[in-house]
Image (cartoon, rainbow, N blue to C red; front, side, top):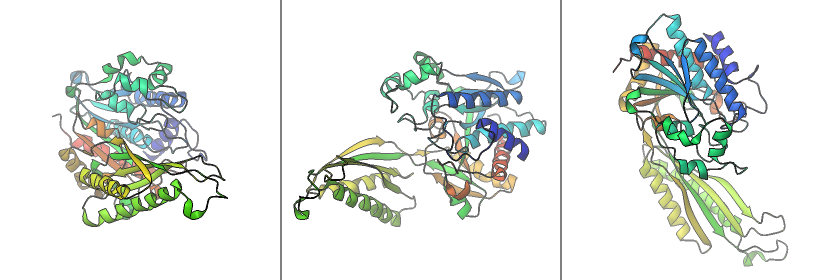
Length: 410
């Protein structure tokens, strides 16, 4: 299995070596993503699966007997697109391990009592467009034609135009939505993108929930002036105020974590200063703040703390809410089954939650869904040096195989 995983990892990444100093660049609806999808289709068909591409660009590979045709399936899957200069395991590990589980079933000559699907979602990352999980949104009926026309990349290309260039007809996007009767469940495997599994001495993580964000823009209006002639006590430096806000966000998040079971993270993660000239005092600054927790109450408390802090300023300031998404709790029965896989596999499980969004959070809205994490080296992700060991990938195959062979057809 390890030799097979090594070989297919390279094929899905469309490369002859994983050591890529500049990383991988398979942005949404590009030729690079299409080539990776072609590699997925080839490998799925080699395993005896039949493949179809839906109207959003997702590829659905299906394994079934004649008697199972038309019956609801259990599905596995993830994505093959990357962020800019990304790694070759985020998303790819989930697709690879799902195909590996199919191979193991065939090697063991096991026929499941239900059809099995492996879904390769399109456009999971938000690196090209501001929207993430486009493919799974379409599959669950959450993608609208309005979004197709109003979401653009940095070159002004709309999502609709990108899909058309990809060979799709956006007018048919609603046809990508699937009926609730199509699937029994959905399971996604992903690299952790952190070190909690390793730190706990465990082999894998079973996620109970996904921490969706509140995202804010804070606009700070000072007064530009000459850096050489404006006295220090006469200045309205917007960047100085912004620096204080950055520190406050960090310290307030630490304080909120002192008295709550659910961890919260808050990050002042983007900054835009104007006029951004060496000899001009910054007159305007926009700070982007990302707040995440599986506890919506914790997120709201953090936003309230920021509101209270900003209310005490004499500087002109405005807060703009960019995103306010409720966190997603995954199916509890699925979560329990994924934790219990440690009994059948001998691999120790860590009960946890996800701080990052994944396709599974959309799938949960229509079908019982679960999320498995495998370790990644030093928790590094969205980086050329992102890495998961072949042994951990093999463990991922074992976990998905164990889940499938203990699940029933209901």
